[in-house]
Image (tube, rainbow, N blue to C red; front, side):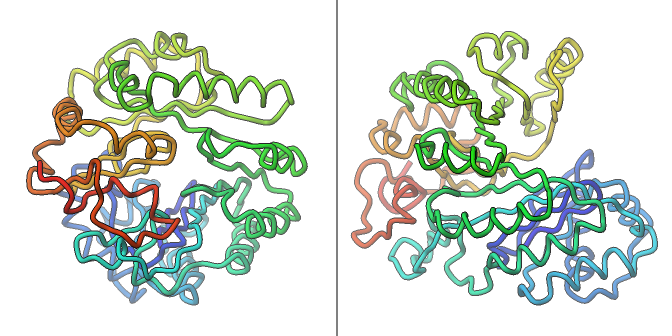
Length: 381
């Protein structure tokens, strides 16, 4: 469960994860680690007295509260944070981001292996307290008086369980909120087009911008062609669509040049920097200052699953996201190593094992199939 106060609230339905993902923005990772226990205690016990620094961070919107509580305690945590902490009173919550999970039986060999604690639908195998639609709708009703205006649905293939999504969208639409769905381009079909047209909801397609040679190797040189093809179809049908371009810190080209190169209708640009590339920081600021595009956000963490991209986490795991998982298993091991060297992440995974071609698991459920190339015992780097 992730609870992010100030301008945005993030609810993760996989609420047993219990991790604190780089929650301190504009602050060092050392401070984040120092504050972890106090934040955790506050989230669970609701009686911890914050230091002035913690209160300041939360009230300024730089801090997220993380908990692994049950669904029943979710509302109490939000209310406690808003009511009992004096510096948090009057916080205006404008955005709710809900991370959905596909159905998972939680019993396949991939999930239950001690090495692989995470399955393809991003659900922890021991999680029994996932948020359901009714709980989400109830939470939305409570947040509206606090200023809630927009709801974003993210996580996995949100269109996989169409009946579930239909119910959730139907209920949320009653509140007059702006609703947007993050979806990979490969999930778009006639049902999706009709669905978002019927409810007049936004469709946001995140695009991870690789260096050209990586695009060619991983995506068989047709990834962006397919995107542009579908984008043209959707734009012709006057669908409310936005494109989120995610740029990583290996790129030193001007931001405008990148956007122009792919000729994409960009509304949001999300720039990731992992604090390793000072030169990139300088170029990034130059790009932002010279750009005419709005909603540009620079962030320091690299832990969000980038739809259509290769997710390399700081703990050494490799997650091929939807859109490339069909081709990533065919990449030669040495090419993977080259990619990791290029991203400066090889140091984090030297002791990990990567399954490239032949996964040892014979009983993988449909939810975990996209994760067949995740770190496992297939190939040793």
